[in-house]
Amino acid sequence: MDAKLHTNVETASVHSPDFNYEDGDLGPQKGSTKNDVHDMSRMGKRQELRRNFRFFAAYYGLLNGGTGGVIWVTLGVIIGALCMIASIGEMASMAPTAGGQYHWVSEFAPKSVEKPLSYIVGWMALLGWVTGCPSAAQLTSTLVQGLILLKDETANVSQLWQTTLLIMLFLLIAVAFNVFLAGKLPLAEGIFLIVHIFGYFAYLIVLWTMSDHAPASQVFGTFSDGGGWGNVGLSCLVGITTPLWCFLGPDAGAHMSEELKDAGRVLPSAMVWATFFNGLFGLTMIITLCFCIGDIDSVLDSPTGIPIIQVLYNSTGSFNGTVVMTVVLIVLSMVGTITVIAATSRQMWAFARDKGLPFSSYIEYVRPGWDIPLNAIVVTLILSLIITALNFGSDVALGAIISLSNAALIFSYMASIGCIRLKRWRNEPLLPRRWSLGRYGAPINDAALAFLAISFVMSFFPITPLPTPTDMNWAIPIFAAVFIAAVVHYYISAHKHYVAPVALVKND
Image (tube, rainbow, N blue to C red):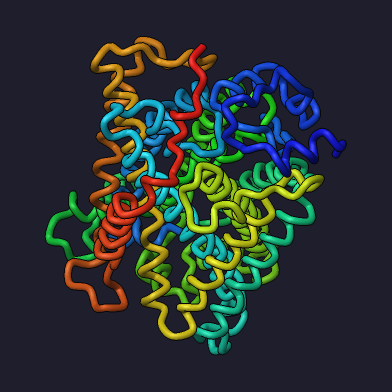
């Protein structure tokens, strides 16, 4: 990093209205295209991160819905998710920034509410991502424990302290990768994409050729109310959390947009195509599993606690074969944890850059020469470890915090898409973009909002109608408490120092 850049980082205000990318070579120096430079300049943001990137659990659903329920609900979720991600992608093309939802709300909401609403959305989106970090690591640890239990059902590996330490270990590995191998993350994700594709077809071949298959009428037509809701339709909706979990977090790409070359064009296409192919492959795999699952009750009661591990073992009859195929899942889950840490830290860094967090000056600081938000990554790790540590005393406490992730992220999507839909309804001009929904924008936004509204309500439902404290979904009181706290904090003090992104935008 040259002396001129060093001086700018140290002394110039990030939000200085006099800053202009055209005055220097900051953009090209960090891998930006001319369009990236224009987008950042319009939004009044400094290019501090290097642009390295280019385009490149089925339990609840089976219990609540059965094979037919999980298949048809998954199909509905894919359609809804495509509408949601198309809407998000269009906004990302208008304003490709690491801030994501709270930035879009600030630009598109009515002036009377844009500042407080963007602040609240910023907090809820960050809450969703921070609680998602231990959730992702927990999935990885659960797969490891399931593999051990497959070998020895009596193995003592499921005590709270053991699970907690495993989650912490995977969080530390993910953070270490983000810090020391950040420049290799695009290459690593490209390699693991190849592993993902080959692993996917390996799974299909094994399950298609080595499993006993149920008749199609049974697979597509069997619906169950395993949760005891008294209504099969409601039970299927409760099971929506299974496929929904796989399609939340599409804003991860937006939070990495300031490290993506030609983000305004590449990012929306990447988000939509990734969702389309993930949905296609995911639906194919769900249907395959439902054909090969055999007795659902025995699979759900598997000592491994992971249905897919038991299905693989039942199909292959080989412990070694099941280990190899499960290790592929563990590796991919670990890559997912690395990606969640990366997206969370960028969301946190962007919100701190706009003075939306306590200790914002520390969190937003990017060390000269590093080109990554190291301080934000460290804070993300600390918060994730604190949340995980709750598991030492009670898995109910950890589950309660983690259950917030879905609801908080869905709320942020609803708010941002709702704002762009309101502008369309009022026939107000939209920002220029290189990826547009055109005349289909309004119906796609409407479909996305309907899907998100249903998903938001169902994200607060427990697995069964009369849950024990352990099985209770505690997201409702915690979500309400955080929401109220954000509102109160904004009107007491945050409104004095929070810089709404729209205040920095330059009108072309």
